[in-house]
Image (cartoon, rainbow, N blue to C red):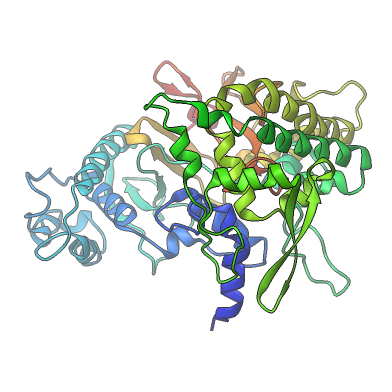
Length: 503
């Protein structure tokens, strides 16, 4: 049974990381963040499976139906779904489960949301792509919560192929291919043995440590010079807001409306009272500017959070990370208000490049123990580094014991994903491209593999994108992996991944 006091404390401690001040289970990014936070505390749970929604249920079921021959109906809300599924005969496995799940959302007395029509159309588009890509599909089924589930959302069964079927991973709309912790990404990609990821460390009692510090925390812990640089970045950010927070008040253009933006009030969703609750963001910053100090959390006494006033000129990154959430939020509001959105590109973005990005870049390059190595160096699969980063390929692709098929974006993005065994046989190299500007630490990664004809071809592109996230804004907490891209390489109409593995 869950200890509610512990749960409340966990939610209060982590609320600032979510844009709404609490995890929204309808937000994919919030669910990913919550899963990561729970995992760092030793709780490994797939919340997206545990909290299935109409979007997931209906999209996957409709796709399974279309794959085995369902014909589009004029109105999904008045259709007789028992009859529609009966028409498919033995082509649809576990037909009753499919019909019953549809009727949980659609029919008399149900909400019958218009968005369900979009799910239905997207499922039809995806199934058309699957049918054109996969030969002789005889049967299909959706993977329900009580079934064994790996990567698959549905299984299709092809004539003369594996009797266990081919698992298909579906994404509705754009979707995000994978969500990775920054420590895991950097460790697996560059073989950084000194960088700890979750599960790497065993304590004195022989237990695996379930929590690891963030990238910046680990890098600066044993490097005073690096810590000094990150502190300089935090101080520069705070100074930028103090020097410029009044400018949005001077904007008079109605379409900007940044005055109202800063006049919004902070409302703490916590049982612990906040002395700045219900104050406008402008007044919060104004109070900091006048006092020349920032309230930094110390300890809780009689269920009340205590603060220490730290002079602005002496603020460190660690102290700013512990600053009153209302202050962090107010500074973030100003940072995203016009005209600061333009002026920050001249001040804060170069500062982040010169501090955060340089510290992380120097750490990686020095850890590679190769004189002259830089983040734009090609990593050959046969090299020591290349062997190390097979773990990265496994992680980013979500490879498992079985191959599976990935499809999303209405069928526009699709490919076979090889099993770990097949991936180990791949002759490949990776070409990193480090971006020197933009404020975020970004490495674009192009992965090339050798086809059976002996030609190297682009299999896919992804990225490592480390940035501050959450309502605390810039320099609040540690950097996190944010919004990975995943682009599948093609030659004409052919998918290069499939050519390389002979699918």
